[in-house]
Length: 160
Image (cartoon, rainbow, N blue to C red; front, top):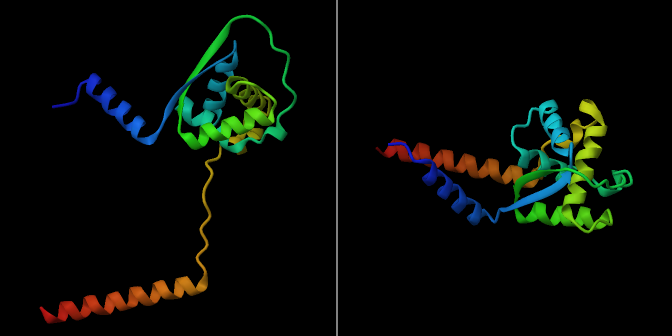
């Protein structure tokens, strides 16, 4: 039988706890969420958390223009989950921007990415990949180990 919504929610909450994910809610000026939605459409991203996380990981504080003047008025709430490493990165960007709160850094990241347009913001939504280079001596040892294991498997098959 299929799990109920409550069971799925409880399991998700347990998994987030295990992974150290923390829910963040950022209050941003009205229109910020619309800009984020448009960015997500441009880059075919379905999850708010993924979009915001990629911005935090790929943006550098020194690339952002000075903060626009803050205007009092209605606001949007951007809600997502971050693990500790991304929270640390957001804190570093926030400090480098001279901001006191992560919400201001998130607002500036979204506004900056949106100002670049679909093509200009594409690099900010790339998924960072680790590049692994195997030295020749390690590759040689791996081939030798694989060859030795293959010989052993063949010998074992001959015994049966």
